[in-house]
Length: 222
Ligand code: SF4
Image (cartoon, rainbow, N blue to C red; front, side, top):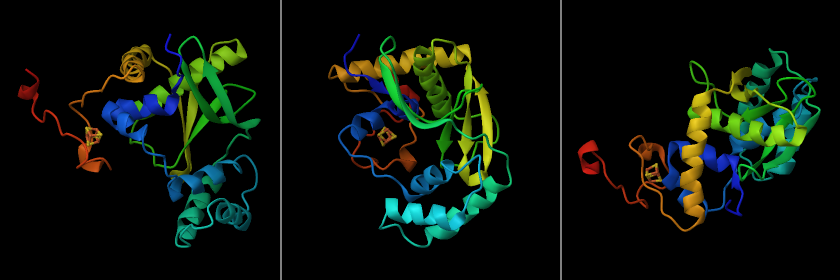
């Protein structure tokens, strides 16, 4: 087994484009303001959400935040206030699986099933959850299973901007996706360079322009 544990966030990112993970590894992550806000609101779910208190915390955490984000924060709180939330027993639990060679930090932990939830600063897809979130659920579930000593079958995804929480139960196809993505990342750990995939979202990627576009037509692969 490769000695560097692969972060679950990298697995999720590699679902969209493994080349992007290659670039991300040498570029420090800059936390978007939307994430700072949604993450901070998530600590208050399951109890009364005091707007001024949350906003003050956000301003302390991110002193340079543009004040125009206050209305975004209030809109997220409005959406979350209209739903029932479980109170987490723990936040930000670091977990790892030596067996699968992965690690990560789980946003919210509960004493009853589903045992965890993941905080997202985006709106949910029309149906189900995205492939990137499917592999997040699987990755954290594998790690948490090792910690708890029992099977973890799924998790909730908390979409803070829309105040929705969606449960996802892990499917066999997720484990197949996990093995193929992990293989690419383990190869990268050994110095390999990943290839662009057919569905790489280059048009919305910050590395567009720095990245060799590679094959652009299916016929280029043959
Ligand atoms: S520009 Fe395209 S191929 Fe390159 S990292 Fe971004 S998504 Fe991947």
